[in-house]
Each structure stands twice: as C-alpha cells, then as structure tokens.
Image 1 (cartoon, rainbow, N blue to C red):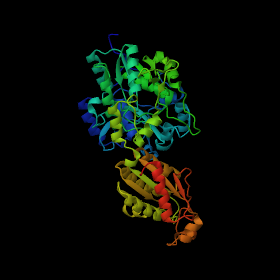
Image 2 (cartoon, one colour):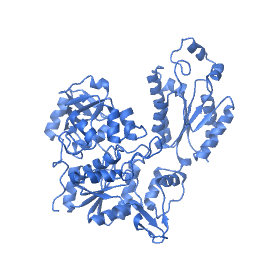
Image 3 (cartoon, rainbow, N blue to C red):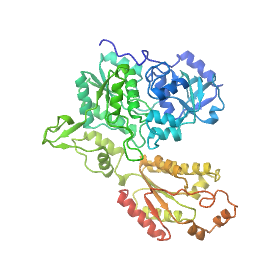
Length: 570
C-alpha cells in the first residue's frame, strides 16, 4: 500500500468556507435567525464540518433520514448507519421554513456555521428508536436522549462552516481527519489499527491493542471519545491524563494518541459500523471492534440490550462496503504462572487466571482499596485516585422529598447540625422555602415552574457535591422525572442519597401551622401538592422515613448510620 485508504464515499469533505467567504458569511449571519447548539449538536457539527462524517455535507434531510433509519443507507444508497439531524423546538421550527438560512451558534454566541434549510419535519421517534437502537426502552441512554432531550422537530440542510468549535484542553491531541492523514503521510504510516475507547485503559487494553497492531503489521492509533459518552463515565480530563501515561508503555514510534470529539449514541451494532466509517475517514485501515462494542448495558428487565458479538457480526456483514478491516476484540486475561496477559482461548488447563471486573475496579477505587500492579499501571491508578477519591472524601447530596408539612426541613436541619458536629466537609442547606426566596423568587407554582425550581436546587447541589462539600436539599419535589433528572445531574459527581419523608397527608394536615391545606381544600390555593396536584412517591429511595414513628433526632441519626454504611462518613 503506497497511499492512505480512501475516505468513505471517495472524498474527504471539508465544509469550512475560505477566510474571505467566512468573513462575508459572518456579516450576513447578523440578519439571520440563530439557533444555539447544545452539547451533542456541537459534537455533531464539528465532525460534519471537518469531514469525520464524510460523505455527509450537512444535517440529514428527510429522504436520507428515512432511509438511514430503515435501511442504514443514505438516499443514494451509500452505507450510513446513524441519523444525524438538527433537532429543534416547536417554537423555533414555527419561525423558519424550507429555503430559509439559519445561523448555528455555540452557547456563547460564536457563529459556527450557517445552514440553508432543505427539510423540516416531525419524526416518529418511537420508530427511530426501535430501528436504530433496537428498542424503545428508556433505560437505553440513546433512547432516553431521543425521547426526553432531543427537540421534537428535525431540520436538515447543507452547512457552510465559518469557525471551528473552540477547545481549550489537550489542543495538541485534537486532530481533524485531514490533519490525521497529513501526520500519517509525514510518518510514512500506511497501515493503521484504530482503537476506540470511552474508559480508562489498563494493562489488558495495552496488551490487546499492541497484539492487534503486531498481528496486522500496522501502527496503532489510540482514538478515545471525548465528546459525549455514557452517563456516569469517568470524565475525559482524567481519562486523557491516563492515556498520556499509558502511551509511554508502547514501543517508540509505533503508537499515536488523538482525541475524537464524538457524541456517542451507545447504539451497539449500528454504532460499531459508524465508528469504523469515522476511523476510515481519519485514514485508518483496521479497526478493533470489542465485545459488546458501544453497548449501553442492561435493559429494564435486567438483560443486555445487545448480544456480545452483535457488533462484530454487523461490521463483518458490511466489510466489503466499509473497506476498513475489522480486528475482533480478543479477551485478554492475566495468567499468574506466566506473569503475563494472554488471549483467553490460549489459557491451558490448570493455569490460574486472575481477573478484576470493571465493577470491582470501581469499588476498589471508591473504597480506597489496593489495585494490583498486574491489573493497571501505577501511574494510571494514581491519576484515577487523584480525581476519584474514596467515598469518605467525596462530596455528596442528601435529597429529601415529601409533602408540605411532612417534616423534611426539621429532619434536614437536625442532620445538618450532626454533620457539622462531625466536621471534615462544608455543609450547605438548600431548603425549598429559602431557595424560592433567594434563587427562584420570580417563579410561580405551575408544574413547569416547580420543575425549574427543583432543577435549580439540583444544579447548586451538583456544584457543591463536585467540589467535595455536602448539600442537603429539602424541597417537596413531587415529580418522579424531575427527581431523576436531579439524580442524573449529581450522581456522576459524588453521592446522591434520596430520602422519602413518607408522612401521610392526614398527618401533614394536622401539623399545618400556616393553614395551607385548608386553603387548598377550599380552592383558595391552586395546584397544591397532595390535594389538587399529585405527589409521585419515590419507588426506590435510598431511605424511607415515617415521621409518625420517630422523632426528628432519631430520623437524623438513622440517616447518619445510612451514610456510614454507604461509606460517605466514617
């Protein structure tokens, strides 16, 4: 092979305008209606503009979308597995029409691109979820995003790139497909094995990738995703520092590290085909496809969304069209007698295999337990310990929920005092009434406004938790979905302990000092939780307290014991 592999579709797209045309487009854009891109859209537009999504020239139109969803092909028949559209709100969609040009900006208002609208439609999201992800189960993060976060209207059209999305981190490791290909050419690399990952890499990964490159007689590109991955994954800053330590373990001049700003969909088999196309566009000739590649884990019934080899089978099915050679993931295990990693199918009878699962590794990390040198490199473990300390050094949030008058604030105050007596972390109380006075004074009591208020509390608590403090929240928080949104916001940053203060409405009415329940029953107060508006009781809180059965002091003591059993206090 004397030249690099051709991009998907034959031509590497570059949708950026020349500096002169970009300057003119910026002037025109001042008169255009603007859409502020969210995180996922920013990831998508970056890879559209720089050619990583070649042969796409913009967000998919209706004909391309329909065929991608149903057949994994663009309207012209080209293989393409993942629908990439601009999802917008109904309010925005009502202001535009086919043929209009819109400005696409980052959250700070910087113009990234303009797009002439070719199509505008309301999709059947259930059909999209079923075809693309093979399920409508919202335990799948791709389905959950599609159903809950993605806008209800899709817009498609060609893009004119004006300015690259800005990254301030790891800039020397961020390479577009054109830059990657130029580097390969400069180094004389022609056969390149790409390895996709969204997790820290340990010794088994290093052995696997090194063997894969050696087998293919190729160089190696470690190409981790640093855009959007699975909720709960380790942050990319920590991971990249780990990759920088690990890259030193490979032979010199054999391996390169580059970051990919991709928004993963966790789409299993389809996603594996998509990942292969993206690596082909970067100039790679081989691609390692793992066991349950890009799988999101288990569904609502506790079963895996995808089979362990579904992704490998789909990539193999389209091998000829893909033009990039798949290297199947070999499960590497550590054999104690040999003191080295070998492929699982090469283990001989009587040999001792040592293994630590991902779950066990995370448990040891969170509890500050030993992680053996055969499992990971000391530098990698030290890096992860630095950014993911054991539970007793992490921040956490105690989130009380219950009816008005249930005793939430009283117990929360007792708990706050006891935690301050213990010392070690700063404790902040975010009481529902205090937050309404200081953060949400302009909000009413409609369902929308109540949700906004709870999400504000969640945001403040997430910042406290992230920075190692303790947040105690005591709002009513009547809606299941809003509480889940708050949990999802905080749990990746530290502990989240939900306490359901399950005092009955009859007891709350008896305790009512302000006469609120009486006013609600008389119709004076509208949309009052527990009377004229429902309270959706938590199904699986970390703790449930019946205040009819214990004093506030006893309740606070029980919560302390729970925190101790979970490892957050000692």
